[in-house]
Image 1 (cartoon, rainbow, N blue to C red):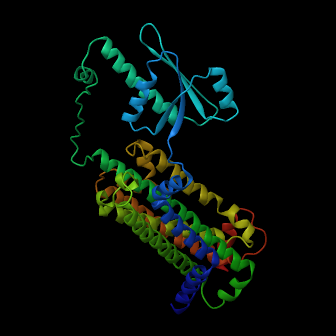
Image 2: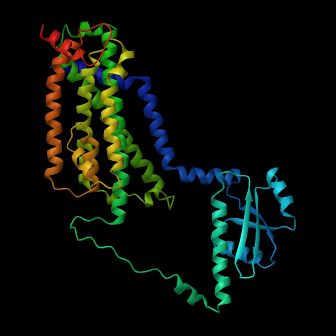
Length: 419
């Protein structure tokens, strides 16, 4: 076991001390704090640059009765729009918009039936918020004017917009509220991304590391003192431990960042998502499926990495593995809105899809205990079989040199391992 722990330590410390690992981790920590404090930063930038100033809207009122109403309505709604009345013609204002002297202008009028007509002119292709607020204000004015025409009081007008009383009742004992479903969706989506990118990144790292040792002929020295099987599993565990450490750092950083910023920014992310609504079982399943998913794909990556002699061939060799995890992610994402759909249920028992798809189901639904346990058992059996088969391939694959052709080299590696 001494050789095993030496290789384990070497795989862990070499990657942990690498500049790429330190820089990537530091950038991610900074990005997490930046994301958590984004509302405060946006408010600060707006204040410094004057972005929090009111939008100026030039209005041409041909009726002579709408502009004052519009000002009052926008002030009531606190829309952040400042009205400027102008006597210029539409052509003059259009020329000013075209030359970018002003951003936009509005022309309003009332026909004989008392219907408001409005034309909003701008040069901006992405100007949707301002005209939307103006349209809402004009619609409220139209309602008030029609109410006055019909001699309706404010209370009578309100009765016209009284919402119906609609209540949804779910008789399932495991039914969740809308807030709980939203929280579960956000958490599952975040953790699916973590599992997805971690499995891809660390599995590729293992395959690349094995190929790099072969290309530098270091492998020949290593396997003369330690068996290839010990070497493979020591690498898988070493880099896997580093991955778990990195994810833990991100998790602690995220918790601290959002915890310290939550109290200062009302209406932010934490108003829609709170760890108080997250069940402990969901977090436990996230850890279980992350670890099992990693070992499943890492073992496969080590197997495939042993077949290539050049680091340039690694990506081509692990492409089938990458397609599997991509397919799992696509299935999980498409099932996020409806995790009870048939193909999601079936895919959750396929070992290479289970880390994402079964986690989606246990996070979104209240499943009987046997379903995730069966999926976990299938994954454990697959990891065992893949480890046994991978060890046989790895034993001969690390001794193979020359151009790698395809997965057909697996048979050659097994034969070489026997010799």
